[in-house]
Image (tube, rainbow over all chains, first blue to last red; front, side, top):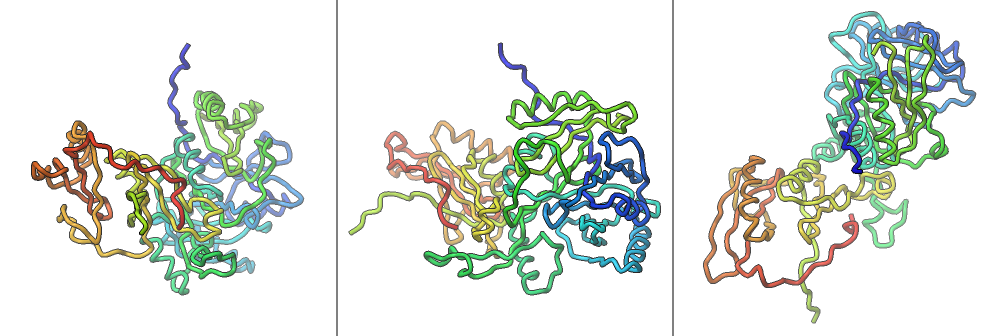
Length: 312
Length: 158
C-alpha cells in the first residue's frame, strides 16, 4: 500500500518559550523579574526549573546548572520587544547597577532603530528591541531567539523545509552585505557581535596555511525565519564547538515552538520519515502550562521543543 | 601544443546569490549541485561564497561578487558585458522556454532567426537578475553530439 501523502512542512504558531541555564536560580529570578518585568508562574513540568512569563504570554524557563552553558559557549541569545519607555527604564536601572549595556548597528531592519545588549548574571546574552506598540514597564514579547549553525544549508532544510518557517531575511548572500562589512573592518560601522567576521584567505597563496593569508572583513551569514509574531535567527558558527551527545534529544538552552495538538502528533510522523531522532510526545500534568512536548535537535545540535500550550 | 577540447565549466558573478539561484533554477531549470561557504569549515578557510549549478550537463558557478559591478542599462536585453553565456535547448523545448520567461516576467528579445546555413536556429536574449547577458538557442545540428562534458565535483577553488 502506498504511504499516505502528508504535507511535508509543519505549522508552528510562534516561539512559545526559551529555556536557558543559570547557576543561581534565586539570583536569576530576581534579575528577570525585577529588572525585565517577567512574572513568575508555577507548575512548569520539569522539577527544579522556574517558569517566568512576559506580557505576551510567552515563557522564559530558568534551568539551574552548576556550569551553565551560556552565550560564550553556545552563541544562543534571546531578544525581547519592549516599548521605548520600558527600554529607557530598564537601561537606566542596569546602568545604575553598573551592568554594561551596549548598542550596536544591526542588519535586520526591525532591529536598526533602537536596540541594546547586556548579559544576565550568568552571561546569557539579552537583547532589547524597540516595539512601538507595546506597553508596560517591562519586556512584552519574545522578539527573536538566535542560535548558531555549523551548516546553513542543513539549517535551512530543517527550519524552512521541515518545520515550515519562511525565511524573512538573509545576510551574507548579497554584494551590499560585503560592501558594508568593509566599513565594519575599517572601524566605521559598529555592528553587533556575530554579524561580521574576519576571514583569512590563506587559500590565495599556493600551499598557504592558516596564519599566512590576508584577512578580509566579511558579513557572517545569517538567516531570519518568521514564526508568528517572533523571529528565529540562525547565525553561521565561526568556530567548531563540541555538540552534546547524539542520543540527547532534550537539553538546554532550548527554543520552544507552539503547535496545536494535531500538528504535534503529525510532527512525530514527519520527523520519523525525515530520520530525525526525537523524544516524545511527552504528556505533562494538568497544572502545567504546556500539555505535551516533543523534544529534538536541529542538524547542528541546537535543542528544540515542539509543545502544545494548555490554552490551545 | 596542448589541445583543449571544450569548456568544462564557467563562473559568473552576481550581486544576490539567492535571487540568482532562484532565477537559474526556476526559469531555466538548473539544479543546485553544491554551495560553498555556507559551512563553518568553509568560513574558517576564507572561501568565497558561490553556488554550483547544473544546467543540463554543464557546470555553471554563480559567484557572489564582493564589489558592485558595472552593469549596462537593464533595458538592453541583447549584448555582452565582457561576456555572454549562451545555452542550448532542444528545438522541441524552445516554446517551453519562451513560456517560462513570460511566466516569470523575464523581459527578452527574440526569438531571433539565424541564417539557414549556420548551425544555430533561433535565439532568445535576456538578462539574469544581476544583469548578466544570457542567450538560449536551439541548434539546427542538434542531432550531432558535441563533446560531452563531465560534471566536476564541488566546483573547485574559491
